[in-house]
Length: 329
Image 1 (tube, one colour):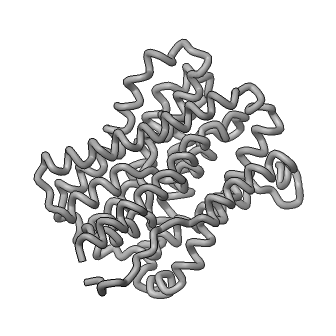
Image 2 (cartoon, rainbow, N blue to C red):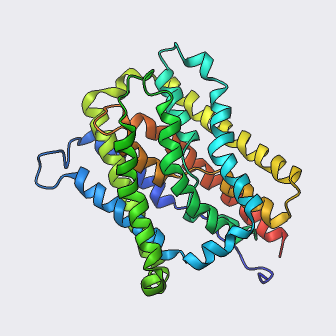
């Protein structure tokens, strides 16, 4: 129980949001740092940074706890169904309006957001603050990324031809397995030896995680500014894109509440379903964009919706979680 009068701080990593904006600004002012052929190539640094990032994720999780949390299978299926089915189905409703439009790539960028896995650390933190089912949040955060390795590329493969994108599905799956799944499993297996160290240094590992994402953001936007991609997109279009992304968040957020009540989950389970199901991972989005759109000058365009979504979901959910936590002392 929380003591009366004790304040619960919202999970708002302001420095990270500011860092993303700084990386975009740096890419605009000084594009090309760490380009292919230079002494230090950001492409290679990012690749190994991603592998370490997911190794540390696995290192912080207990395999025994994950297996034990399988018992609440109804809740887990609901969360993953919202993440990988409800989200994309909502966006697909607008497909007929964009399929022959010059804005099809913008629609596809929002669709890419909709098929991404859920967040990892922030979902667990938010559920904890709101007094939800924390073990369930940990399980869904871990399993969502593994499911996304297959489902996200499968969903995107349906529309790549229309977007003039080339996709070698087999090679992409292998890259995602090597960069995400293998390090993650290695971390899980080594949890018994280094798990305490990883959790003790969680703060520093989080800084490392976000630093890797900042590097990916810089590299993606650097390539796009060099190729002049954003010169063809009006400012009003970006504003409409922001509105659409926020509307998507609230639609899924409200539907998640309705679904969890319909299935008669208890309060703690409802919080976990809503907070885990309605969130999307910038970490996975950045990594998968780097793999799926490798060599494409439009790669950074697919990062824009997830960055908007990420910033807004952290802001809004942190306020809701704090309010729920105070009400359930």
